[in-house]
Amino acid sequence: MRLIALVFACAAALIIAAMLYLMAPSRRRKSRMGVFEQYFIAHRGFHQNGTERPENSMPAFSAAVSRGYGIELDVQLTADGVPVVFHDFTLHRAAGDARRISELTFAELEEIPLFGSSQRIPRFSEVLRMVDGRVPMIIELKAMWKHRELCEKAARILDRYRGSYCIESFSPLALYWFRRHRPEVMRGQLATSLFREGKRRWWFFAWTLTWCLSNRLCRPDFVAYNFEFRNILPVRLMRRMYRCEMAAWTIRSQADLEKSRSHFDVFIFDSFDPKARSEQVG
Image 1 (tube, rainbow, N blue to C red):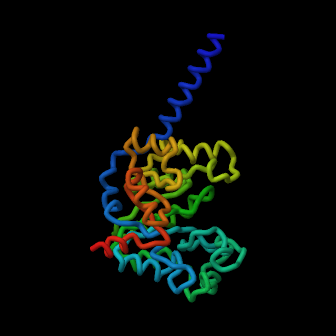
Image 2 (image 1 turned 90 degrees about the horizontal axis):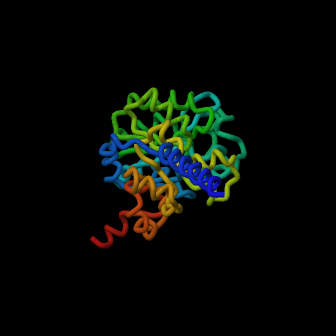
Image 3 (image 1 turned 90 degrees about the vertical axis):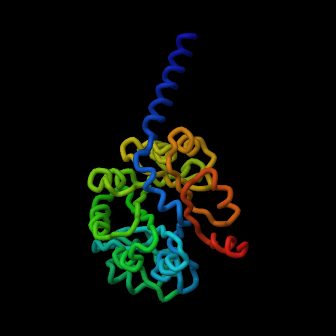
């Protein structure tokens, strides 16, 4: 019995050691994240759905710039390979249309209004021209398996951009592509506790993303984790053991912002104005 217990103890120790090795992020360029720490980051722009300033629209990004907020946005490809800025994989929530972005050409998407407004889905290049380096940008690549074309096209566009930006993705494949082909670009691993969210996923996939076990392969410069799970063990280990740069998504109130300050370095917000309180106090 003692031998069996010893074998199990050794196996457990090896598993823990392997997990700690695999979840180690890069810390070599932590100082470069300083520019993002200086800004609150507006999730999909400083938006209000149901108005002429819906999420991921040109007015939402313009409002973020004028308000002095950084910008988080989402990029994916149309059927004809155009990088556009849109979060969901389908148009159901934004336009009551069940079709996927990947099924429609950019010309077809231009005919579809967003959230009852007159706004349309913008090209990624169009947003970059408007922002023009005035605020930092966190660019999420919406690529889980078919990642290569999106990474290549987004990278070619970003090669011409001179403002401060980083890329992030739930896809370790996308991060690894940037590590190999654009190693100078700051990159972040998006993560959440898929177990606590109750979403059905292949267990190995859920375990890997929850514990960020692809970090050794992708070497992210930061980890962007779901704010709701700020106290779970993976987040605490990355924060305390590895001194990892951590971004919080998505903060939806001033109270949640205050709760997050000791856990994260960069704050992505939505549905409230973080500056409103400081302006009222001032």
